Each structure stands twice: as structure tokens, then as C-alpha cells.
Image (cartoon, rainbow, N blue to C red; front, top):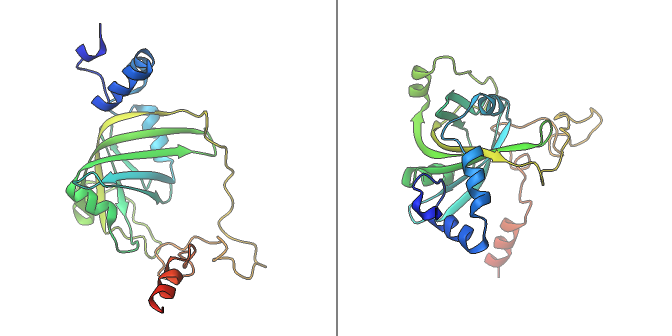
Length: 223
């Protein structure tokens, strides 16, 4: 049976076309059938609850894309049930690119990678909506209150899971976590990657003008 006759295949029409062109339909169907779920199973839920970071993909109503990074203590990415998870949006640079995209287009993609322990990844694709912090806490009173200054959520992003599937370990490097706090003798421990500076407005602790963009603009403006 030609795969176009199947209406239950995950993925986009475009990826199905490329599978046809490159002769990978059978491999893709095995992956769809064996690995792509419409919910988080128990092992996925356990994996999510111990992650300290993930990568987030969003797009606006015109399809203009953005990819970003989110981090927090284990459990900051919260499993609500097998069909939903949520994460808090903390103080950032004020641009609100991801939240703005979600306001226009609810489709999001999350990628979690465990570089240190299992060297495996998990994709979660779904539909997101913005939920006020007080509303989220009324619905889920067991949500932790982060004692670290600057780690008070502006808003929560709740994601309805549509697809959940493995990211294979083949090309994932094994990374060893380093202690956050530098040796006491370090003259610039915080700036060198010492104690985590959650919620800071200190430009130096946030990375300063690492890529020289501001200096370049100042140079152009002075001409």
C-alpha cells in the first residue's frame, strides 16, 4: 500500500514527499509506528522531571522561526499529566520573542537532551498557551516556590502534547557537569561561570557584549 493512502502517518506532507524521493518510507514508518507517541509514557515523564534545560522552537504567524534555550532546577519543566507539561517564563532580556510567537502561533517544539547520564534526547511537539502564575498555582497548588531572587515566573507556558519521540544517542556527546561555584581563589568567579546568577541585571554576569554587536553599532554611529 502506498503511504499516501495511510491517514494515520505522523509528520508533515513535506517530510512524506522527501521520504518518497529518498526511498526512506519504510524506515520512517517503522519509526512512526514504534517511537512516536501522542502522550508522555512513564519513562518519558520521569525523564522530563529530572531535566535542567531544554531547547525551544517557536514561529510567528508568518512562519518566521526562533530557537532558544530554557534552564532551571530539576522539575522546572513540570509534567502535569501524560498529555500536558508546563514551564515558567522567568525574567529575561525583555524582548519576549518566544511568548510573542506563541501568542500568534501555538505550535512549539521542545528538545530535551541528557548529555551527562543517559546520553539520549526527547522531542515533544504540541500546542502551547500562556497561563498567568496565580492561575497556574490555583490549578496546581503543589507547584514549588523558587526562593532564588529573580526566579519568579512572569507567566507559565502550558503545552498540550501532540507528539513525543526519542532523539537517538548516536551523535550526542557525553558532557560532565562542572560545579557552579568557582574555587575561592578565583578573582572573577561569577563572570568566569561561577555561581549561577539567576535573574540578574548585571550586564557582565549576563555575558556583556560578548559578540561585539553593541561595540560595532557604537562604532558605526560615531562615523
